[in-house]
Amino acid sequence: MTRGYGYFAKNVGLLTISNFGSKLLSFLLVPLYTNVLTTEQYGTYDILYTTASLLIPVLTVNINEGVLRFCLDRDANRRDVLSVSVRVFLPGAVLLAALVAANHWLRLIPLLDEYAMPFVFLYVASALNGILVMYARGADMVADVAVSGIVCSAVVLGLSVLLLVLFPLGLEGYFIANIAGLGAQCAYIVIRQRLWRQLSLKPLSRGERTLLKRMTAYTAPMIANSISWWVTNAAGKYAVIILCGSAMNGIYSASYKIPSILSVFQSIVYSAWVLSAVQDFDKDDESGFFSDTYSLYGFAMCALCSMVMIANRPLAGILYGSAFYEAWVYVPPLLISIVFLALASFLGGVFSAVRDSKAYAKSSAVTAVCNAILSMALVWRFGVMGASVAAAISYGVMLVLRLKDARRYIRLRLHLVRDSAAYAVLAAQAALLVIPGVDGLIRYALQAVCLIAIAALYRREGARVFKSVVGRIQRGGSRA
Image 1 (tube, rainbow, N blue to C red):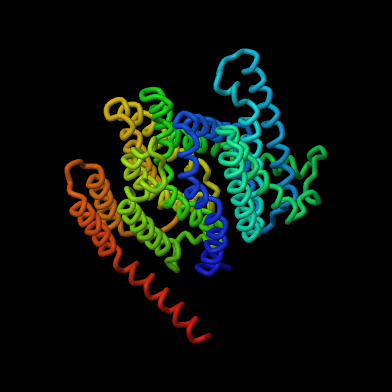
Image 2: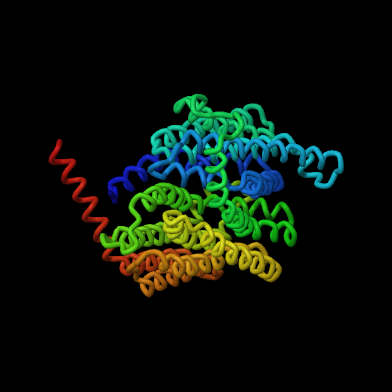
């Protein structure tokens, strides 16, 4: 039995509560970070966080993805899923600590040695957080995920003010605030769901060993996928560090903060969509649920992207400290990259439903190679802007590949010519933002024309959203 739009909308609402706190807080704290931290410090944290993000899927065999997928099965033994995943996590944490200790003795990477303890704790908190949040989502405890996100945000906010303003610890305080926030979210989920009653650290039973093999068979191909995602996300940053220096990487990293407005929306929809895609998968899409949702999502992402572009420079003036202000230039291509990422991730829900993790890996690997090559070439030729453009092109490649692969599993009725026209409008709008010599009023007028063009292209979806909103308002008024 399918759950359809109601189940999807409920989860979007709950995850919005969670992400409004966590992701939006990250956005709102940008003025604090960019005024308290130097560009070098900001770039240092970003590269260490990026490195931890690479190691998590490698050292945990990407087990968090298996936790979500196997908890969603109707016959799932969730206690076994949790116990197996934690026992995969523990050896990876021990191995990382050993590697960091070896680096200390051998002095191979001075930066890692300088921040060894924060790096290990960041890895542990991030990896465990991923497992527990995925478990709660897979167990349909989305409300707990939402509240835990608020807890995380409150801790990060409080400690950021305390350790960066009242007791200025600089980069160390930034590490502590973020690690404590992740830890607080883990603690809330453990206490709320009483996970100590479900977790077993005894030797694996025969059933647990079988489950471990099934889970790792699913997640192992996704290691390549996760590494590819990491390369896609990090290639531009490493290219900037190598060719432009760590200070410019700090500025480039800050430029991601305005696109995080779109990232919030994208992450909310994707988290809810994976649950619906598994529950409501229909290879013929007879109800049109998959096709219509894709079109509505495409309209929302393109419209939001256009609106954020219009607000880009005013937002940069509010958010960025003077040393970071030039980051606004690199924002437009990054916004487009998130549109492509959002739609490619949406199609990834189809692969989750049919457990084809290899399809994830293939498209992600091609995207990673494309981004690595383009980042070095374009940064060498055009500087930091080359990294932003490389990201947009690479995620566009991913979207094309996933559109092709998804059609092997489901019949999607899409409007690809219309969608391509909308992407072309966004590209033109991005160019208008950064081309020098265009008068301010004329620039904003042309930006508004681009937004109107997108609304016209998606007029059917826009009318549907308008009717839905009006209907809800009218029903609310009649109840009152």
